[in-house]
Length: 435
Image (cartoon, rainbow, N blue to C red; front, side):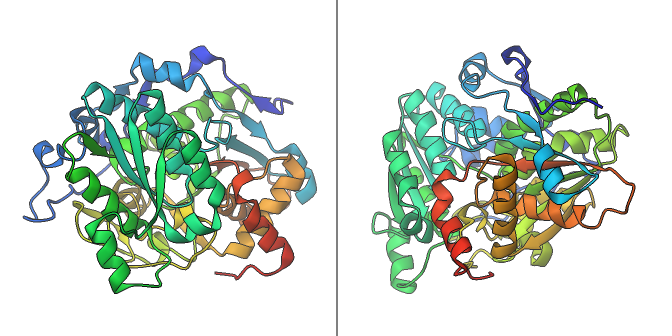
């Protein structure tokens, strides 16, 4: 066993290809359906919203998709990201478990979201699009897309869920620094936003509402594309570099076997990014890792939702997706993990859960932030509110380890919590509701 604290791969070890789990699944996932006809989508149905390069990835049955050299060059700003052994956390817990965490908070925007925003902006640029529209919850995706749009000379309009827009003002400031324009959703800037405000005048907003606004804006502008930070296949494919790097780094830690992987789960991009390459290892018999999706009790799509076709947005403008869903009109409590407040789960993640390839648990805010504070004090990193759910899930498992066992546990830390400090203050003051 290695005595290393941290492994950072050299830049020439940045993956050259993204991994697509679809061809390796034991059963094929259900296709998305046209929102009007109910028939399976064809590529032409998506051209008003996405460039063909991303549409081809969305429908791809290829296991490996080459990463363009331009994208790999930008990835070098922060990739490969570190994998660390949480030795001080192990000591604080008094556990025999060997705990590792993959930290995505060192990207230019402080989260894993840039792994997909950069290629999305790139494929839009080469397709001749000049404007991107999107939604964002806590703001990590909005900041990531604003950064990527600026890199490629595109404008970027962002609809941020109202509860997060009001409670996290520095997120919209971060977007503005990168050149993005953020408004609170539902807003007065779109027809669907105005209708939602009239119907729900006191709403805290939801990702479904914000998606509707961003889709409307893109559909009405021939120079614009809609960009999504999670849920869709091409986003999950882009994030696969997380798990690919992790497998290489564990080899350097001299850890041949993984016992548990814990990831926060909202729309599914972080979970898929770390776990899908490991699921491939499970399917091929090289690993027997248990993958655990850690979702918030405020939006428990996997643990309490239904596996069925549903719209990805509130207004019913997106294709219908076969996923675990709480219903497209569901508006979750305004919890601090805004990036996890989504009514559904990515179809590929939902399919894996339905097939028993992953498991899921739900975690309340207080338990999540208790875990985050413990992790911060031990490891010196303040995790994003969303990441705290993965840490809390791991701590539950660690407390159940029988004497004499030393399982290998990998935790996905999806981003930095520096802009989530008001939430930590609320937890430390004892005023945080346990939703």
